Image (cartoon, rainbow, N blue to C red; front, top):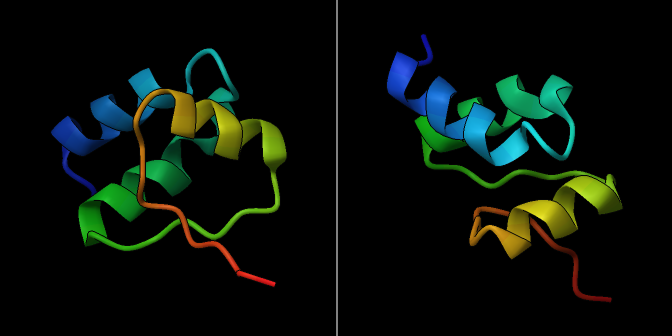
Length: 59
């Protein structure tokens, strides 16, 4: 279960990027994992806000 605190944090991160990504970001925060996304707008927006829990392939 995702805590209300993590859901609220994720919403604040996503609200002006794409609110529909809130559950994915919240789960990443809850589990202490890494978000793997091909969504460039989401990734760059989260990085601008200091979110670093992103999985990146180094090619």
